[in-house]
Image (tube, rainbow, N blue to C red):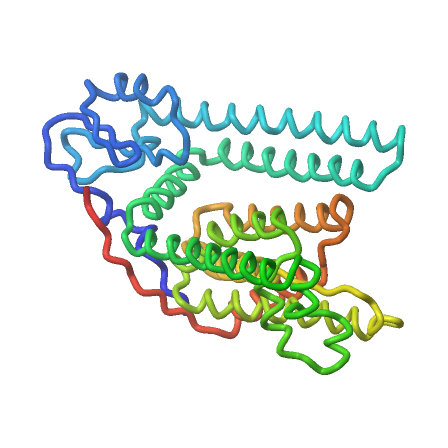
Length: 352
């Protein structure tokens, strides 16, 4: 069984012992003159602010969307934002397709399909918020507040960021020592001729090198966000899934390319932790489907849309990206979720 983290419970939310209406945004309390004043204060509301509210009769703060006089305003603002995104993505899809039809190029088709996927996701969010907008937003508010205020979550996000910083320092040092990125990949990456020479240790070292600064930056951002969330909700086993996904993603791609006709003579290699990033996506999506209280409502669907976007991008927009590493990473994450019993430690929550 998977232990459900405390974010889904309400007892850990900040205690309220006052006699006034209080609004809590980004960790700062503001006294307000009732829900109407709170609505005015929330005119610039965003989900990342994790706004909470407490009435004079409340013993704990609660998501502001649950206060009827405020909730209708927040749901409307939330839906308006996704409506704008849906319209913008529909325009992107139409313009991309028009450009592709006038001058067929795969990147243009990729932009159009990306617009279609993002439009579909925005429309899905609109439908979900129309069916039960208060619960939809309340769950996400509690989840974001938990991630932002829990000391254990802070440490985990910092740990992933420090790991990425260490990778950057190591690669910069290696490039300075060996001359350039291609030379570094040949020396320590999953270089195809070396794989044919049975240097399988490169599956490990290659997983933690990157082919460019943009390649590293994209993986680092995704890893800090997804790694922090996965570690906070699923515990230390998410680290194992990440490492296994990174190494297996590199191994499958390198072996496939090296064993292909002429592969051993190809002056190229594969590198990057994207297999591990996709393992985290597979891990969280699978566990969320098995236990609907593990993540906020709909988040697992959004992760699957992220996978689809990545495949469109890597196939049509940036063809040098390895889809095989991504597929292998997802498979590792799914298998890890099915086979490993997670026992997440319940974090010590901090009241404000």
